[in-house]
Image (cartoon, rainbow over all chains, first blue to last red; front, side, top):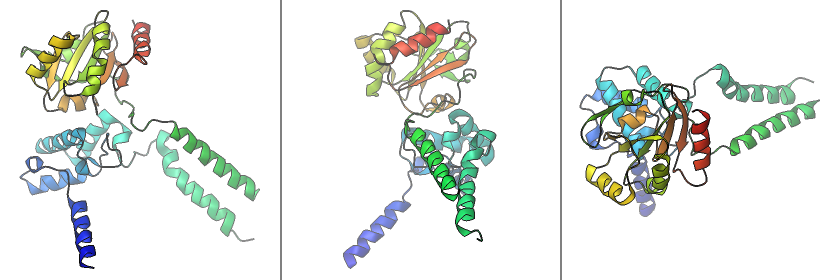
Length: 124
Length: 168
C-alpha cells in the first residue's frame, strides 16, 4: 500500500512539472502568469498534442521565449496569440477561430447530437 | 427514413474521417504562402547584415533553413549544391557556430549566396519554421510560393525544380 502511495505521489508530482526552464521565467509574476495562460493556448508544432508550456521541443522553447519577449514589450495576450497565429496558421491554436471555412468544425457535433436526439427521442 | 438519415450521417462522417487519415499530421501547412518575405535582420558569416532587403531583387530565390547539428540537413546538402549552380540559394542557420559551419562547408561545399545566423530562433518563427531543414521558394515579386518541409531528396527534387521553372 505504501509503495502504491509513493508511486501515486511520484506520478502526480511528475505531471505537475512544466517544461519551462528557470532562465525563461519572468521576474514579474503577473507577466509570468499571463505567459503561462498564453502558452497553454498554443499548440507545439512538433509534439502536436502538447501545448508549448509543457513541451520540451526546441520550437516550443523558442515560442515560450517569444511570448515572454512580447509580454515585456507590453503586448496584450490577444496580440501575442494573433502574432503566432499569423505565422503558423490555425494549427497552432488549440481552439480554432470561428470562420466561414471552419464553421462546419463547430457546428457538426451540435447538428449530429440534434439529429440523433430528434430521431430517438421525438414523440411518436 | 430514420435509417436513411443514420446511414447518411454515418457515411458522411466516415468519408470525412477517411479523408483526414490521408493527411500527414507531421506536415503543418504554411500560413505564409502567397505572402511577402517576412522582415528579418541577421548577420552573415562575415558579420555583415543579411535581411529581407537582400531578397527583394527580381529573380527566383531559394531560402533554406539548416544547421550543422541537423542530420537530415546533411542528406539534402548535395542537392542544394546542385541547385545553387542554376538558382540563387540563401541559407538561414539556426543555433549554430561559425566554426562548425565552416568545417562542414570545407568538406561538402557552400551552396549559399548569403547565410544569416539565427541564434535565438526568432527569425525561424517569423518564417513559420518548426523543424529543420525547411526550404522556401520566393517568386520574382518577393512572394513565398512554396515551402518544402524536411530534406530535399532524389524523390522530391524534381517537384521543387518544376515549381521553380514554372515561376521563372
